[in-house]
Length: 375
Image 1: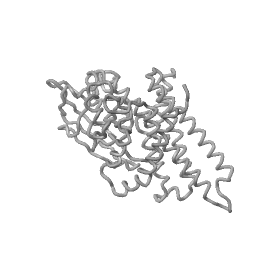
Image 2: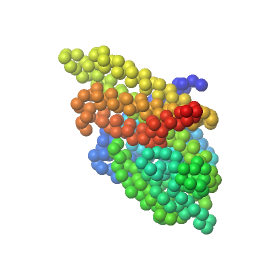
Image 3: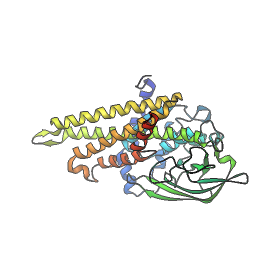
Image 4: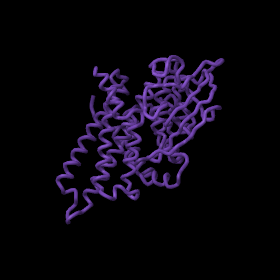
């Protein structure tokens, strides 16, 4: 399996880089932050995503999409990361589509996602850190279910048109089985959102479900078998977050190299100092290894390989390590100016921190890989 892009994918990368570089550079993020924008992304920009066909990238052609895969979605996500472009692409066009594909719920929601009319949010986590425990209950009530509990860190949860909620329909909080995935439209009675701005200026909500009544049509897949759809969702979300994180790391590294070529001390550009050259070379190697891990995970997901889950955790952990190194080196090599808000480099560090935590941090995925290896 080649660890490089084919001709069509390379053309997509060029298109995405030009589009996002012009329509949503770092200045776009800064403007939204300075305006204290309550949405967290620009809806006009999201409409342009739809015009480009990006919103329906992974949606089957039969539902109005392009029918592409994780590799192509990752190409767009890397450019989103490189430009720090706020958008619901990861939660909506990648993770939600992966969960809904092949289900009756998908017949309703996928055409809306492809058309850019629906933004999706993922209500998964319930604690301060991402984990496998699910305590939110979904109890049988008439022909449907009654949902009670809370979810944390639901990106776009306050403005989403669709909320994908994983709930427990059987067993105890730490059981792997007994889960059901629900697709809830915005405005469902009893569901409330408390939005909070995160360190990277994105907005995530705490969702409270107070005896929320839903009918059986809200179930994605089968009752008590939500783990199947959840696995697809998390595989896509984790790999997508890794691809975006890679873009953040590469964007920070590119800006740092440009600074090393321009900044002078003692009459020389600081990029000529051997110590900084060694650090830059080390960073390049770490990012390239992470890039290979991400592409491998994407390809295995597209193939439906049983080895995909392990590759996803490898990719998420490795991009967390490489991108953390990249943004730390970026701030240090920029010197004092790197610590100021006037310099854009700080935005990369903040976004890297959030992406590292999303859907499992370095420790979480390193532990998954170790356990899979029998340690």
